[in-house]
Image 1 (tube, rainbow, N blue to C red):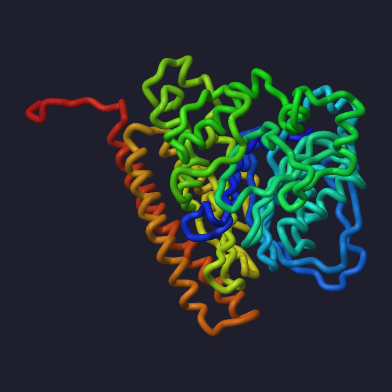
Image 2: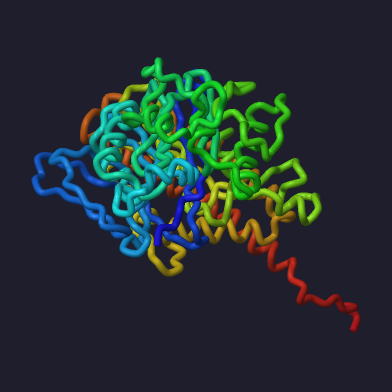
Length: 474
């Protein structure tokens, strides 16, 4: 059974970010709260004949090219049941990919181009694309060709970036899709609904699309508008689920990045792309991905009515298995420019740890996750930590906020320290150095987490209701 990725996406152009980086980010939300994942390195391949992939979820399979770049991945542990789902990574050419966010086409369009049961789905998508591309634009082209050949069994949206460009691609029927380049000075945010709006077919620098999509729409009378070609209106939905599960997330992220703009959380035409009120930092993205409508009546931890607190689906969920910000810097040498900020356990309460992706291995606590509870595994460790914070939210939220703030302060200095220490190192020597430094960052993060864990456990003991005060003279 396919378990759709009910995810939230944020994309930031290089002139919209605080430091000139491109950033693509996503929460990987699954159907169940417990879906263990691991963080691994898929090795490079050179001249390896006979490479092949077969899905565990359907009958899709294909031969792979003989040459492949090394890429990090965050797959499911139980891949034979859940599928591979490599999810996100940055290849050796500093091209980032995050896949996928489940997206739903409407019944009008699917009637004439139905989903392909055994087509290329998200469980294999990163594996057959990311190791073989040289740019974000190249990623859209390769995936588009594969969808044309094999079809798609589900609606999926895919994120691509390199140091110059950010692209968002929406696959909405068995064979049709549109991709849009996010303008350099803008950001975009969405979650589980068709997001792209007006498409300019005279602007191939900023739009790409499936073959004959215009003819398909015209032939089957699918354009609902009197003027223009709005991809969201033609292929998208606006259901009860959209109003309470999807549009509100887009609304809240824009409320954070554009507080001056008043919008309705259920507005079906909330813009996909905006210019932010200020330049966007990596911390801004992380806060948004872990948010739950703070300072509104809709916060499940807030002071609204029960109806208000359960009206909209939060952005950060207990079903968020990992969250990531894929950052490509342009102010440092290319071999040190790609950083994967990975949050295992849930972005509301746990940190995004920086990993330079020019590495040959990940920390053992990340790459050997057990299916059963194991505190030595980062995935279980941070899931447990998040559960402890939430269990006494009023008492622990400020402690957790201070902890995350301090780690973000540390990470900013730590990243620059690692880059400085890499001076003069090249090739395999640099890769080995960055690998070891990543593991030191992991160790520091766990040490600081242990401190807060101990403090919260101690305070939890003192909160017990199984207590009784007696007169000490008795």
